[in-house]
Length: 367
Image (cartoon, rainbow, N blue to C red):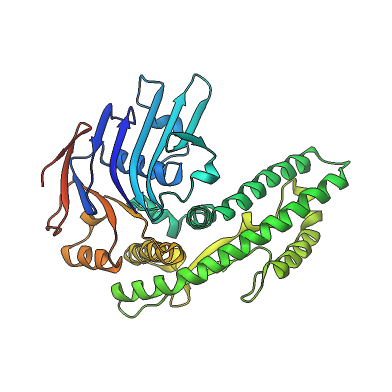
């Protein structure tokens, strides 16, 4: 899949801008705060329907304007498609609209039409940050690969909010309503746990192999840490039984604390280096190497699962690497169809790349 034309209107610091990227590598060069990251964010919006930079989507709308829009013509395996993202900012609320070929669609239908893998220096938080960041990483990757996963995730999240609200109310409890919530969480949560665990199993060998290309004999291992006790070989039925037992065990503590304690919303992706916690014992250099391996693994796993290479968004990543590491990183991706790279400068040439300059949100092709 690839984009042939993309247009931005009132996004961040952009007024109006249109580019026609080439297949293969597209490099955007410019000083800081000129709009390079904003462009990649806009492309990402068309892939995931959400910003990879902020949860406050009203920030996307250019200051002084009420509406931001991004649209792109793309070529995917099923043919040509035009995707659109608009967000209207009001005084108190924002409204987002997603479109496919001009027709408004639900988020679940929009996901997966244009899959993206993004990589920025801030992603180091995946290695050293809170478990919620790693759950979000798994959720987004899976939702792009499997639309049914997002459906289970959305229903689970809604039911979790409802259950937590009921727990906060305190006794006397509506036991019948608790039973309904628990059953929904068991069914959807088991599906989520199974999908996540299978995904991590698919991701792990890619990450281990890629890490081996960068490290001096150290072994990176990924694992899925489940709050309900997942074991390799469990199917969804076995996971439902485990979840039911976990809920029964956690019930007194949940009611005492007023919050749901059992389920995939408490899970984590573990990363170890030679058997030791990477976040706890790894150096900054080891963290960066593991992140490179993880992102290449995400790209490879998505391409293998869908039969189609996703778009690659690299925000100020290659400029942090020496020429040899930059070359090896791109080679590790194994023939991407289209990539977008930003940098303040590059000390080395990238053969075959289309080069653009960005200054004050003006984009000009220079090579």
